[in-house]
Image (cartoon, rainbow, N blue to C red; front, side):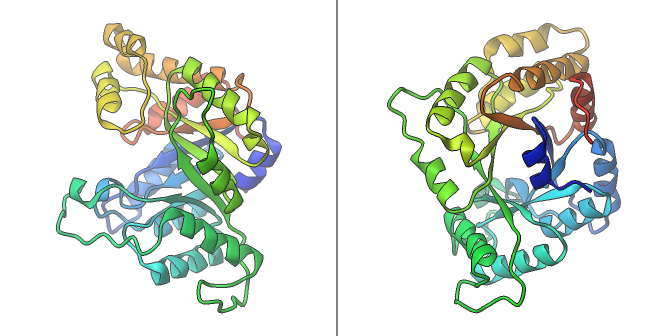
Length: 299
């Protein structure tokens, strides 16, 4: 199995996709979803209690991805664990060969179906990056206790694409790189012109020498879906013309796949872009079809 880290180092363009960990005590639902994506992605993200609702552990979900022969990207939020639990999960992940970790804050508890739950936030995502950096480099826990085996983590962070001014200083991304981040997966961005401007600033700042930028997109199911994403998902950028195109299409599923495949093609021509991160939790078959239509082969 080629690892995600190896793919970033050797491939011109990588494909990652996200699967929402199931609300289930059994593996079959997740296994079936993985099978849909097999052969069309370099790595699969497993979400960590998305929407502040209880799902199967992202660590266990990532272990199931490995069993299926695909390198997982373990998502860890700071919302649900204290520092002891986070360090314990990281040690367990490493022991299972799970080294790719996307660090996140987590959706607000009030947005979930158990709003009386207590958010933890003992550490933030920057501290989580520091924990992994120390486990990798010095082999220490937060208390200074030595690990018998060092970590081999390949940490990642999230970012939101925007249309920057000339004065924009990407200091937050620089800081994440200093703390050990190796890759960035962004929120949805379907506007190529805005993305080109954003990436020009990123390249000019020298950040692509330190970080692999993987841009969030995905196949729409309907124009209504696209409009909802634009209005409800923070940081999402979707041109109105693209929503109209979906509304006017006779076969909306096919049109969504075509748009996604076109974007994959365009992303490959943008300086500094290392790949596409595909998100469509209720349309995984559309993800697989989009990658195939774009002519991407996974070796």
